[in-house]
Amino acid sequence: QVQGRKRWHLFPPEDTSSLYPTRIPYEESSTFSSVNVVNPDLERFPRFHGARRHIVTLHPGEVLFVPRHWWHYVESLDPVTVSVNSWIELDDDDEARVGEALTRAVVCALKSADPSADIASWLNATEAGITSHETNLHYVNLAVQTCLGKLQSCSAKGRNPSARGSSAFSKKRKCGSGEGAEHSAATDTVRNLAEPKPALTTSIPFGPNLVPVVQEAAAAAQHRVSCTHRCSDVSLTNNLEANQSSGRMGCDCESTGVHRTVISTDELLNCLVHPDVISLMTEILLG
Image (cartoon, rainbow, N blue to C red; front, side, top):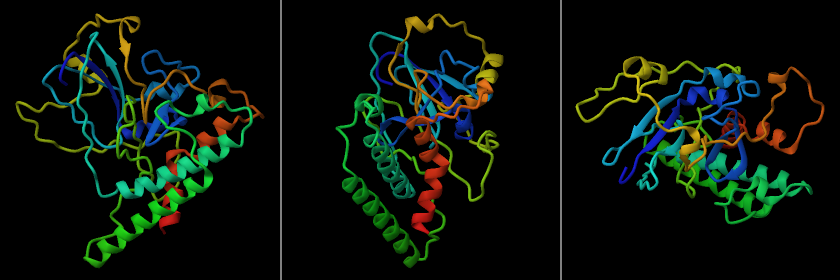
């Protein structure tokens, strides 16, 4: 953080199902949440009540390390804030790019075929424009060939090619001002998406200049600080990704208890490009 303060709302990847992920509006490598995390509608998104929020305020001169796949929503607490972001390239980013190419192909294909869909309503402003199906299919083939090539290279060198990650939305870069959202890696077996996976426990040796970001409830118990900034006083610079949210359309069948027979294109897409579905498709293509 260079200038000003920013408040970060962080959620572990195990809470992905509680954040109601969506890829609409589409932005490369960004998964948004349908929930407004500052003022959530718990009737519409009841699972969010169980999400484990971690909050940290970043001051000038401080650095925040956000682990891979963690969801985050960022508020600017001062009129002027300046930050410098950096992303670390990892080995399984190649597989993640396969999943992203699949997502782009599916979203563009369905949305382009919907005559009632306004481009501005489903394509984020950070995207240059709609890519053709031929171009998207080329991206899929290129990503698959690159990933398989590296896996074969690892195998030839004696490394374990199966030790690759299985997430399809790993962020290789940041697009525009949107914060990076990532989600949990899919497992090899089918699991109940409504039930978050248990969090992994690791022991990290924190020193005098390295402190952990604790869960909201734990932080409040340790040190209660009154919030002097109401939501209306805060400049929201980003949406919660894996990221984000202004109450976009999500499937609220379970919250209302009413079974709807009309399914919108967005709701269909939320199923087809769900992180776990894309991860399974990626695994099949690379199988």
